[in-house]
Amino acid sequence: METTTAKTGPHFGDRTFQWLTLLMALSVFALIVLIGYELAHGSGITLRRFGWHFLVSSDWDPVNEQFGAVPFIFGTLVSSAIALLIAVPISIATAVYLTELAPLWLRQPLTMFIELLAAVPSVILGLWGIFVMVPWLRGHLFPWLQSAFGFLQFFKGPIYGVCMLSAGIILAIMIVPIITSISREILRSVPGLQREAAYALGATRWEVTRIAVLSYAKKGLFGAVILGLGRALGETMAVLMVSGNGMRVSWSLFAPVSTLATGIAGQFTEATEDTYISALFELGLVLLGVTVLVNALAQLLLKTFAGPGVKPQQ
View 1 (cartoon, one colour):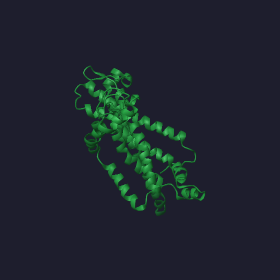
View 2: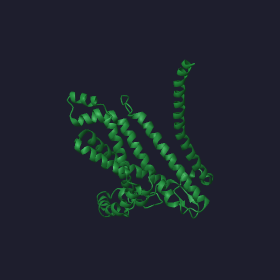
View 3: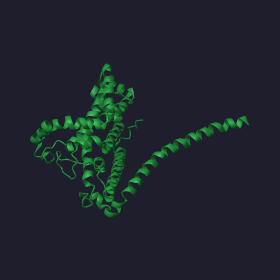
View 4: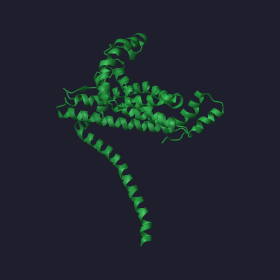
């Protein structure tokens, strides 16, 4: 009897552990499905009334109950793209410096400051942005950009300070510590033999970093960028304070803009009609869909362009 218990006991524990971990994994999927269901249920009025027209219309007129998500989708994608253009080079370069070049006495203080920046609440960054960053941009950087590149459509129009470019810059500040921290851990996980082999072949420090480190870790670095993009797509308070809350599509970076998240946060307290509330729920549904779609495209690109010799980073 004792022998039977000894044989079945560990197997029972293994099966219990397997089912518990499976349950935890499925709970994440169930949570996403539940969120999607609640958003779809709340946006039922506009889904029936506007259908797919909601996704291709630029009209946002609560008085006449005409709603379209194009200005918000446009603002979300463009501001996030600006944030990535600014943040990715800074983050990757910082991670490379901390991992490969920085002296030991400097690495820990710099890492600590980066982590502290990641811990700053978004509303604090928004207050700093509206009272410090925006006035400086309006008085110095934006006029210079307009004088130097005013022949481009992106830098035409009046300068308000609160605009799409300001939103992109504040988003970049918010995602730099995230991408930097993850990229640093990924670069640290590159085996030392990779570097030693490159040095043995006569490579310079830059060649070692480019060939042995960055090439090996590019799949993980791409994942770090996607995590930063996920933060940028859904950020609300800081962007709401510096974006200007514009409701139209404009190719000028100096024009006010709204994102899907700021559109919901800025107007939910004003929504009194059922159709208006339903339209805001549908904006949330669109935001969820955009997030899922962007991550799916990122995974597709990762599988398409990642070399066969690149190993996934754990």
